[in-house]
Length: 209
Image 1 (cartoon, rainbow, N blue to C red):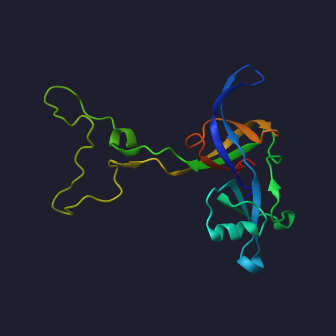
Image 2 (image 1 turned 180 degrees about the horizontal axis):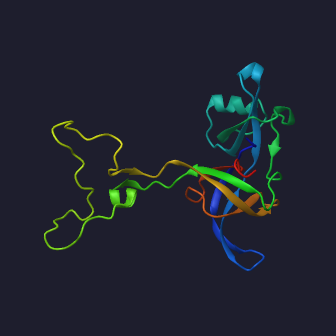
Image 3 (image 1 turned 90 degrees about the vertical axis):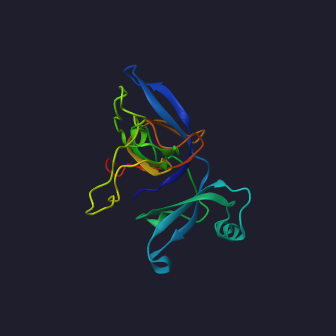
């Protein structure tokens, strides 16, 4: 696994490629990412790098103490990256987006937009029923889910109306179209989960490198 950085989704835009085609892209801004903890096999049982970002206005005492060890301001978001050479990092080190370049592929993880409680047509793509005479007020219903006396119950796991969204979603193999070192921002092709200003985690693509 490569190092994962903490960013904020700023919104979407369009840029033109060399052939003049318009590409829908997402802009991700990276606030200051700091190394807040270095985990080793001897002390923690595994090696990993913990990154912290996005300052917290009202931190608690344990959070203050944890970030004080690396001499950084208390952070609101933390993320770990395993399987790295921890000897290349130091506590309090600031990490930027310099290891990303145009043409790289990245994986982006975020929390999808919450849709609340939804019915089967929106959630599972049910077609619904005919709206002709005699159909009754069941146009968007899921229909019967029951069975006979045996087993006399509905099996769990079926497609029914339930909560939609607010899930951790990872979109893989997104192409980096632009790297803005001055503003610490990436422009990647395609859409990513989450609303504007939501926190996302970006790493180099696992399947494409």
